[in-house]
Image 1 (cartoon, rainbow, N blue to C red):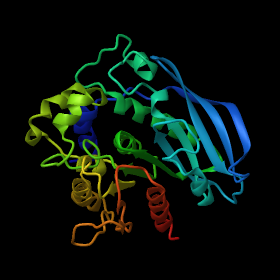
Image 2: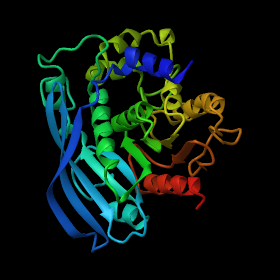
Image 3: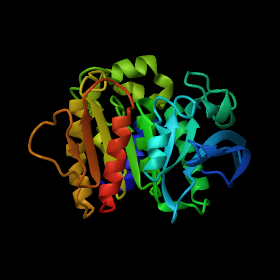
Image 4: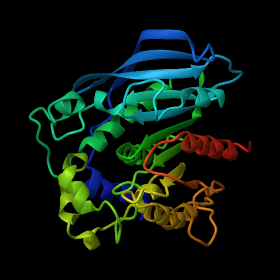
Length: 333
């Protein structure tokens, strides 16, 4: 299958089709802290406005970048659950010390994490709060917003436009993978503990299943996805398609050894399964030993990266350290 065919099936059968890109994206600085992180960084709060045929939409984005820099710096677009800086999922000083900038937004500033499709961006796209069977759910809308942050990032001269990656945890790890698949400008898409309907293979999956996730969170997906809730074997794809759709850029899957709900074994198997597609694109793919991973393993030689952290469902400092290690390794550092 071609990449366009892979994306077509993922959108029509799982995530839904996203709204088109806006005509214009503009940023307005609302506030700035010039001596953030003891003077190591600048923190700015921006209001990002997207002008489109379906109306204007504005949401806040936080931009944190190193004060001292000799050249344009790499950047993480981080989709998070809160708008706190620092946050328990964002060890910002450590990231700054590693020479990276962060563009950061809270997913619920885009649209609420529930079945209400009348608020935020959802309210513009679905004025009556109703969708067709193939229109996107909330994951698609959050991924759309990540693309708009990328639009803005490409206009910021202090950023290295070829080294902008996207990071998300859990449901937002699913979002990061989808955003990466749909936007080749991203350098790498980092999925942290994204599990069911994210990085983990669905067939014979333990922990959370399509049936369970669609019963509780149907609004994350398009309505079509529900027909596979009790018929997983009828899926015309599996989740390694989502990893493969990130080619030709890099994709990285992080798992936690005690995160049985996400099923780290099936997240790892997805990397193994996506390897063939990456290799067909003339890339290294997934470089790994011929065995199951153990806690502490880090496989970072190919365009598909992976690590297994000891512990539970969480976006930890160790995860961020591995992400930065992977990117530095790709740069030959």
